[in-house]
Image 1 (tube, helix red, strand yellow):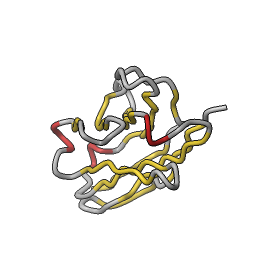
Image 2 (cartoon, one colour):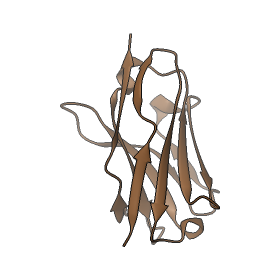
Image 3 (cartoon, one colour):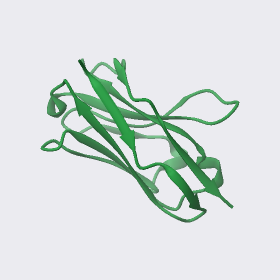
Image 4 (cartoon, helix red, strand yellow):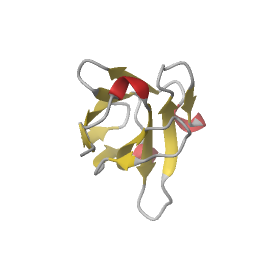
Length: 119
């Protein structure tokens, strides 16, 4: 059974940092692509960061470029999203998702973690 479990969300002041973690079980982490999405209240879910299974192809939403960074620890089967210089508009529920077939279709999702940035 595949499970993705996010953690690391919370309340932070504008300009602060958080690191989200996505711990995976039931799949071979080193061979899959991963993505991070977020959904703010009243808005559609948006894709903010993706990485291919080798980490050679990465996409960042323009509004997070230079502030967010994705990384993974294959030994721990965990993907990370480092978020710096946070802004109130980054407030949302953040989700990680696994792209098992590396075709940009996300097959498994975590439960989400709330990030709130105060001004």
